[in-house]
Length: 243
Image (cartoon, rainbow, N blue to C red; front, top):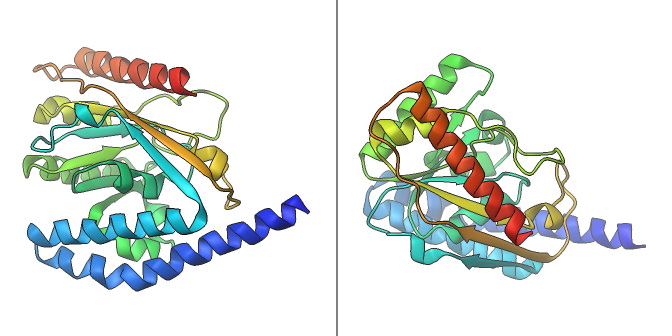
């Protein structure tokens, strides 16, 4: 019986998600053609979509650590990726207009990929040329004063480990552009929407921001490794503390 109820709820949640995306898609896409003011309008509707959806399906978000964010600065937000639910969590919790690095597979999701594409940099993790091009695009966004969002694990963590090993890209970018890293821990998203599944259940997702981590000025392999390790340890500690 419980499985049947969960199935009905999951179908309802996905249906509401798509209905709201259809209703707000043009309000998100059209303003994006008229930066910079249009981008703010687009993000207003992105957040409105996420808020309405979470309200209608009984998913709540709790955010702590907002005092660490200076909205006048650009950051490289790094987060732990455990669930597809992280997609609405990010615009709901970050109070800036952001650009996100995402796997090319997400672009193929009907409607979602189409609406989100103006704010995403799609990458094929297995293709070195694609990875390099994505880094260049993110570098451009940072140079224009935009914050970006990166899952340094590179993919959704379906393992029993707290975090998967980090890729170098975000940390190289941080040093090259002298942009601070801002770790954010997302707790509970995999309980609302389990790893690798479309099954869902009402619940609360908690988001914690840490103080920013400022990069060294030298771009050396050792500096990238040190910065990566510092970010990894900070994010791991946040997760273990709040889980």
